[in-house]
Image (cartoon, rainbow, N blue to C red):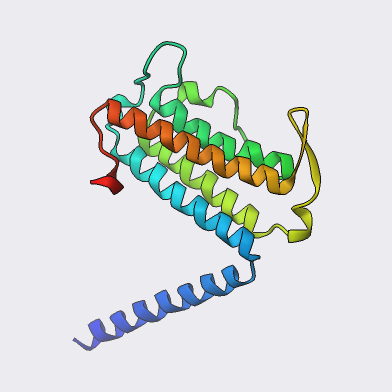
Length: 179
């Protein structure tokens, strides 16, 4: 019984220390960036829970020829997180290619790619300096700022969440958060 009490106490202490550590690192982030990361985390949660709710056999489904399949949409989200950050100094992972969406259809592998891309994105943003947000960058022939790229990144994630919701509902899958 004594071992159980000590184990529970140690587990509580470990979780408390991790929580305090996470809070103090988030406290050092500018409120704008903190809000952006919070919104990305929310979108990530919905994207990933919907990805998990889709049956594996539907990952090659597409609404019509020439349109991304379920797996291709999720891989597009993951890849675009890296791609959009490349405009503000982010790096794509080793081995990432344009056609990766054509080869990967395993939902667990795709979930890992999504999680990794969102983790990288949030970590990268948390290290940005507010003074960098006004820097100008060329974005497909248009001038914008680092802040503008972050808005595009967030909007892009929401856009394809909406697409994924439509794909899920077309296949009889109810988004987990709306049950």
